[in-house]
Length: 175
Image 1 (cartoon, helix red, strand yellow):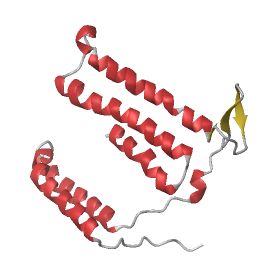
Image 2 (spheres, helix red, strand yellow; image 1 turned 90 degrees about the vertical axis):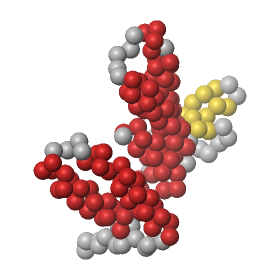
Image 3 (tube, rainbow, N blue to C red; image 1 turned 120 degrees about the vertical axis):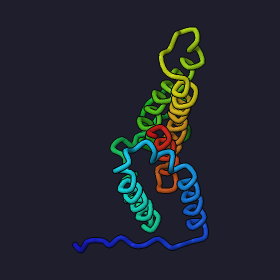
């Protein structure tokens, strides 16, 4: 088996516009980030970050293997005539890939509980600085709820086109 070569992505006007925006933001706010590093490590860090960004910009997207969407448990959950149960047929009222879809509600509950806790932080004496409690944690808990919605959408009909809705909210939560 021969190794696959990484192919360059076509330079479209959209990619160029995104690159120009990223460069403009980096030039405007990059100094603030670099000031946090010791003087002797600023230039190597900037070169490394620029090299990585250039590599990611010029490399084409890596396609996802279609077998990725074949889950171990592909049973649906069906409600017919008042009885509930797993089914493997394509009957009506079936929630496909039920285990994967339903497991996301735990993440949603965590996001709701976190936001409720932040709303009641004055009454509960929650520890943390103002930035963390007013910006970081609400974004995190809100993105947990977005992860739930995106993941449910993806697992309901798994494909490459719905996979972005599963992964995109996770990137916000991980940041």
